[in-house]
Length: 326
Image (cartoon, rainbow, N blue to C red; front, side, top):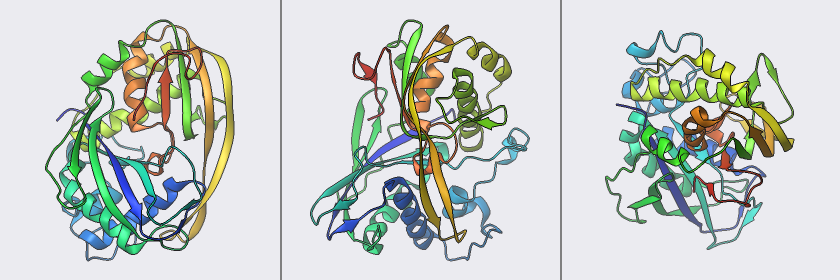
């Protein structure tokens, strides 16, 4: 199975007043983990893994280990989890009773087999409550979509779940890349992007080579571990060629949030750069990778929604049509 990203838009309606943290992605991911664990696995998880291994939905999704065929490929690398949450586009600290919240939920490859579990867990989240006051909500709608082709299909209407898939594949990214022409591209980092390059994390916009390298670490690993597809490209050569692309505009800033991990019993940072950067140079070979990265995200902690970005053909956001993962 080639790389497949299954993107979803989730709509919930609050039944009572909700107070949420400044970065909702942390709240959504934490509540989902608790609800998903209670929904599908009776065994304790204390870091040693589930006794059922990958046969356990929770063990596979939250404690991912590479399959037999990809273990050498994944050696000495962090194994990416097969899901990404995207927080609501507009940041709010409070929702009133009856108000809706929408967020994104993308799953990768064979994790799509567990969508009935995921929908049940998203509903159970509403029963358990989210936010500081554990406000309850009702799961109202889940829509499967291919953002690069503009296709949408409802898979849950509040009562009935449907077995419908709308995968986004590499060919969709190639088609989307054709709508981006020229030697200039804008990248708007919508959530904090934490990208390490040559052992360092820059507080400024990542260089184009750093951005490409981060995508070449993440996306081929998602393909190998969750889709059984091994990429055999010359990654080093691609990163060297990406070094020929220059940063010509940097309107980014560094932001940081704190989240408390109940599992690890400690507070952790969620941080990175947000804002707009522009790159110029020989871009064409990298455009499909960049288009797909809008959905897979880039850098560290993508499961919380970090590293989400939007492409535009330049010279600035909104000045020209862009390919938006919505």
